[in-house]
Image (cartoon, rainbow, N blue to C red; front, top):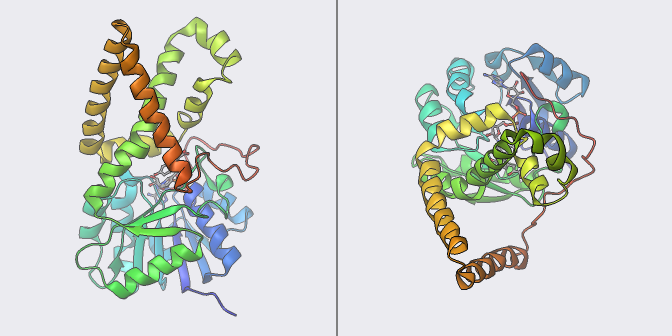
Length: 312
Ligand SMILES: NC(=O)C1=CN([C@@H]2O[C@H](COP(=O)(O)OP(=O)(O)OC[C@H]3O[C@@H](n4cnc5c(N)ncnc54)[C@H](O)[C@@H]3O)[C@@H](O)[C@H]2O)C=CC1
Ligand SMILES: O=C(O)C(=O)Cc1ccc(O)cc1
């Protein structure tokens, strides 16, 4: 029985997220054909070698011609440029979506550029790793992971239902959220943890003698978990910071106040305050486990995955 959700799907950007989509679309038979577009010829060549699609181009506008679903999977700072490039070639009635980690700024960049004849429905799969590029993707990435859709007031309910069904067919659980609320929630659960990781690893790397010896030798401890997050793609995270500035600054402000309070508890030997905090935070993780959410990133045998950095 056919499981086709869209006759032609265009994937703009074929890194971790775009290539994972290509793989799951192919595995589940969700499209009649997959058109792939990406900026660099080198990445495009790799996508072709991996057999991720049915057609390949470095011209974003060419890929979206005749497509029923267009998924933009590029760093959030580039989404406005992509929208401008594809606008004139979009099929009337097509659904255009994205996967960006921030939503209000993506909407502000893309919506004015897109024609009203298409359904623009922003989205964000809460699924990823510290790796990037077309080799890093895998079909199981979205399995049991949330995908948040942030429809606009004028979004057609039928198009929204179609996109939600597509993400469910990719293995995701779908939720809807207001874009501003999305940005605030993600600032605390995703953006701040990455910034804390970048900061602590940066602090350690400033202690030069330590970096060269003990940090690497003893990194089996808590530090190692931070280095995973802190090895995430620099372009992507630069763009997240610049495009969710207000919410991130709000959460960083709260974090700094709480850190100062923790510092004070240590300075004054306030064991009760430390014990109370550590008990409360332990309950948060237990709550996550009880709610049936995965607490550790699934590995899917990707230990050997190659991290592609630089221009892809
Ligand atoms: N990496 C992660 O864990 C997650 C990332 N996201 C979001 O997904 C989006 C893509 O991230 P990744 O796939 O991880 O990045 P990536 O670096 O692996 O891939 C990005 C792709 O976009 C292409 N690209 C860049 N500018 C372009 C342009 N102007 N036109 C066409 N292609 C262009 C690059 O060549 C590359 O193929 C980002 O917006 C990110 O915020 C969302 C969920 C998780
Ligand atoms: O690798 C991890 O732990 C992540 O948190 C991946 C991730 C990065 C960015 C997103 O917008 C969503 C998920």
